Image (cartoon, rainbow, N blue to C red; front, top):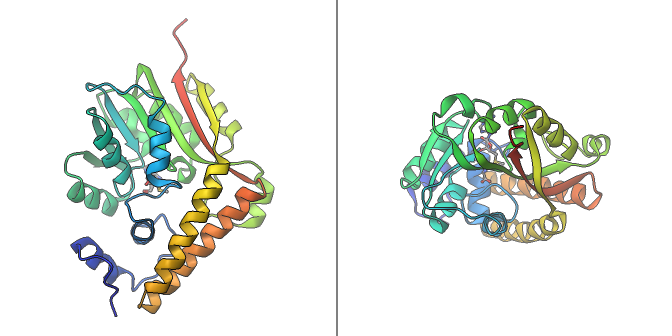
Length: 267
Ligand SMILES: C[S@@+](CC[C@H](N)C(=O)[O-])C[C@H]1O[C@@H](n2cnc3c(N)ncnc32)[C@H](O)[C@@H]1O
């Protein structure tokens, strides 16, 4: 039996896809399930609260062009658009996520593409490039930095809000995620190679812990009102993943960070 939590065409389509349980939350089906549980098109801890924390430090001007790199289902780009009069562009490697974003948020521009190719794909330069939990699933942090640093204005920034692995051996033993996030040292080394420096750093692990508490409560409520056994099982998988991430955060093999990188000034 199909759950009836929403009447949107997208979700009806998605409920059909739920017949195939998402094993990886970064697949389109996985993202759609998590978005329904979170109650918004977000795939990062803290949803709008995190975006607010990131935005409040910045002075975004109406003529700025911004990029959401790894835009997922488009909720982050749409939220930033609602808070600024700058132009925002989203890119993601996931074709279905881009199709969904374009239809749901036509006031933003979305393109299918790789973060590693942003520097080559766009002729324009961006004032701010946001990476909300997108770099941790990329293969090459050097490739991402080389690409992103060539796509920002001289006074622009790359703003990364992501997981940071803090103890690789312990994290791998805990087998929390399919991908092992980069360490802060990895980010600093990649930035150095791309001629960037760290301008701002904040460790927000405590907030991540609170947000995971909240998310786990949302998942439990979702599980209780779900009628489909497949959806129920998928939501239980999501809950287990979230509890594993929370454990890694508590045991300090994983942290949540915000980092802003800028290009080094010309000599
Ligand atoms: C955890 S989701 C975060 C989505 C979005 N930033 C948000 O916070 O809601 C990670 C996203 O990065 C995308 N992604 C992974 N590797 C990528 C790459 N190399 N280039 C572009 N997007 C990528 C995935 O398809 C996915 O949508």
